Image (cartoon, rainbow, N blue to C red):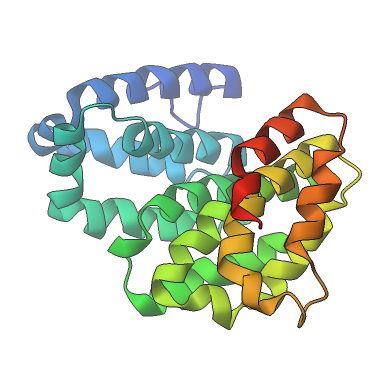
Length: 237
């Protein structure tokens, strides 16, 4: 299979990537054990000089690691030494990719597996990238982070890091709930229960009132925002 090769034009390479990754996904861990060259091809895609190709690579890991409906199959993947030695290691490298669209995908995947990372990597690599993404000048990326931020701070609360970095997290959330883009405000309403639970005691320190936000959103005209608030308003009072 040479369609992913650098000598081919981008459309043909991307088609080759889809075929390769579909094959790899079907074979899974057993296939990687029997055919180690298959995994090497996947990893080579993650290191391509074209970010659109690297994006294919990180999206393969997103699909492979996060879309498993079979819990037993997922346990098999996570328990294999390859999970930490190869998959997590590769995702940490993709987390520092020069392209923001690659980094945000790696960030989403790693959010699900923070308990598999050493504490120093959570602090020095994962949190560092979250804080960097908060300052990104690409609105699409900030909106993606808005979708993830509740899960991120909740997972970081297992390590006490949500409080260590409370200022940037709360300030980012304040921007979300007053953002000009409806999609971002929707993320703000959806993540309000999480921030209320984790940062209620910090309201005065950062000039934010979660109860007032519930009231504000309860008067919004957007059905999705109203649905989010109706499902969690009992937690505010």
